[in-house]
Amino acid sequence: MSEIYLDYNATTPVDPRVVKAMEPFLYENFHNPSSLYKGAKITKKAIEDSREKIAALIGASPKEIIFTGGGSESDNHAIKGTAFSLMHKGKHIITSSIEHHAVLHTCKFLEKIGFEITYLPVDSYGIVTPDSVKRAIRDDTILVSIMFANNEIGTIEPIKEISKITREKGILFHTDAVQAVGKIPVNVKEIDVDMLSLSAHKFYGPKGVGALYVRKKTRIASLIHGGMQERGKRAGTENIAGIVGAGKAAEIAMEEMEEEKIKIKPLRDKLEKELLKRIPEIIVNGHPSKRLYNTLNITVKYIEGEGMLTFLDFEGISVSSGSACASGSLDPSHVLLAIGVPVEHAHGSLRFSLGKYNTEKDIEKVIDILPGIVERLRKISPLWKEK
Ligand SMILES: *Cc1c(COP(=O)(O)O)cnc(C)c1O
View (cartoon, protein in one colour):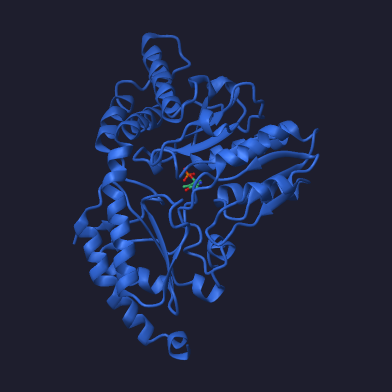
């Protein structure tokens, strides 16, 4: 039985064209870019070519791109880097309650060492209102960090409206755009942010490589000290093959993003429509329209997401019961709780996230199978009997 993979927000397979671009840099072009012979010039140039491609994907200039070890590192670098460089000015940071753990846990760490964090609430769709950001700003606020698109429910935040406020107040603004970059057009000039995180494995590139956009003239502290790689911002011999892969993935995304949307959105819409029709008492989480076109998060009342996940897995269908971090623990997802899903229902949530290798047949199989699974689980659920 071949797998039906519907968890593209967790990670994506590497595009074969990306693997091909990376290959030479694992074999013959292995040279350390900091060395001085011919081989090193090739690897150094490969990194700079890749930097241009990543910059082009988000409308930045190549000098504004720092390669990192992925989305989590980019988030850490933006937030801790700002905190460490501006702590003499203030120690207050504003973020939202639905951020990825790479942002939330970084903020929790900073709280322990004397920073103050405001975790903004969101509305029932998961939207952070620009007005709530405005009201939370204080004289000692040094950074606002609000994600571009949520990984669990797909809601897209009003980044441009928020940046208008931070710009007016002269406060740095970071956005975790890991779920947006490569899926939808993102332009740093247009949204006017100071820092932006992205990760290659969320758009068919390799894992363990990402980038942080840092707007020209923005000074943030380094986290990894050592050599002068990445202009002293991130020491360590570069992950050349990974960086080349990220660049190739960015190039492909730029060219094919629109086609992918045209293919994927109708599949997601069909899945949503049919599941709503066939399963009673389910709720769609996230914003109806301001939502990533590949994401469907549903709450199936009166049963556990883990139960559904197990039965789906048995049929070769891979989905997530919330965020990859939330699943595996028994705590319900912080995102679902923040949008007001009651604890007892939050446990019954499933996230489908589609990608470019999904077909109509994949979706039809889920539509065929899930209603029966829900029925079976509800039959043995005490919650369903009591309702
Ligand atoms: C996946 C993800 C991250 C973490 O990226 P890694 O490359 O896995 O470290 C951060 N933020 C969001 C919104 C994500 O979806």
